[in-house]
Image (cartoon, rainbow, N blue to C red):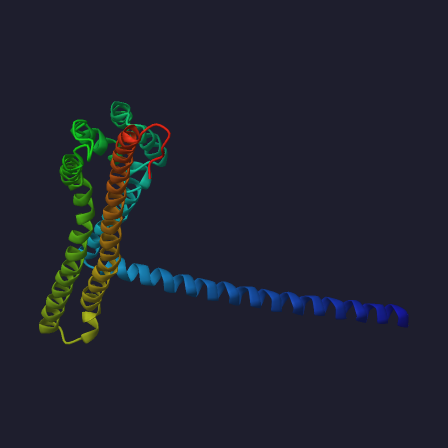
Length: 267
């Protein structure tokens, strides 16, 4: 009998312990859920605050930020080295020019849609074979410069749009700030409760912040892509000058060897 009672007491002890553990576990889980819900509510309330109190100009700034992202992706894809001076094209054309095969170099250049290929296809026809000392290098470089002026207008226009966004975003933010403050003072004149001004003050601050958030990376993108464009164009010009120098050296070397008497070496 005592053993039965003892076993019953032990069973009750185990049961009470299990219930206590379950209650404590449930309490901890509920507390964690409540904390997570409060954190989510705080994040959601911040977003709701921007949506509800940002005013109409916050949506204009949101659209402007999408334009900034799209413009950055477009310029990153367009301003690549492969689109300006492909390495394989440079090697092939240098080989042709070093062996004085100007017509072959022009044909290869015409087959390439790259900036360098189109530039050399425009410039190489100005090579003057009657002037072996420089092959009309000055006329070739003038043609390269003329082509560059015409062909860099379009990519530079896209880069300049970053500058437009850089100037427009803070102005839109300032306009939203003025709009929010005007609405706040209008309410202040009608109602004595200062808490009613919170929405309009939020509009003023959110639009100012949004304008600066857009303008700062846009300014960085403007200088980054402008310098990248200038670097790519300079590399194309450098490759063109190297090819002309290789061709001039090849022509003059042949002439120098032709003037050396048989059995002697050119110094």
